[in-house]
Image (cartoon, rainbow, N blue to C red; front, side):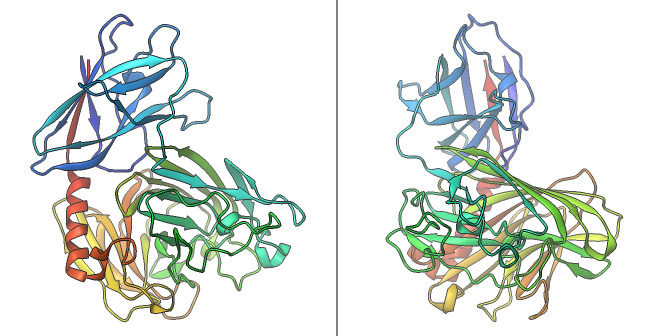
Length: 429
């Protein structure tokens, strides 16, 4: 029997769980999950490393059953791309101080679990005459800006990750800002969003559909949760604006890590980012689980010299209000705005960053003009080989009336942050 440590990060899709004692193939296997916190958990994400589990003989995929024999939705993901799954993930809901025990079985092929509650949508055009095709990875080069090559290579300008509450997308075309799809439905949005009738890329998502619409006015901000650096008090943009003709990142590699019923994730590698005559590397891993209006980002920087501060964006293009700063607990600080700050100031939209308290310094306001503008920027201490973990939240008034009231949005953020802080103890035996 062995205990598996689970990070208090709801959506960090990393192999963070150390291996536990490995029972022989004939032993009975159970997974006990204990909520050690003082409040109930609603859909807490759990990840278990493959090495902490033992497949049955001739059977390669795990299945989880409740004590009543019901199947628990789960998924296995191959994060390193070697053709063999690396981790098992599932979600649990538990009252404060309560526990549940799941039975672990093995089958020859993975099960399918009804309607998915997360997905990644990523489509690419390989040439001006090519139609959009689904992709699991792609490399964007510095000279492939849309107005330079004459067409948009990416469906929805870059990949979308969504759950049953909200969707996000990164402008993979050099801008690297993060936008929001507001959702009015819990189902996944159609796979052909961003594709015209001719099969080419098309902006057909900026008008209201039955599922929702694009709701954020990003402009030259970093969007909601986009990241860059403050270098010796000068703002540097990771990437370019639409006015530029060549990217300041030599290659940007996007890879879909997971897209399934329980969790989805993408990795972005920005290689040879060269602001101010320097040469950096940046890796971002974004992840999303069901049931929240948030995604997580894990960011690592290479080539730091010691005079840099990480900055994380909270777009303010449609609000004159200053952000509210709330220290929820010893682990997390929340920075948020709430206003009619969607496109054309049409709808209420709450935007927030949930930031690590041990790295958060303060926030600054970017200029109204420039390569990084119209945004608040959370300032975080950054060190080599020490990833930053944070969350970005978007609560749209048409998704839930709760988000039409600032006090209610603030309570939602506090409750969500408590969920992120919760310690869950997992034992495999």
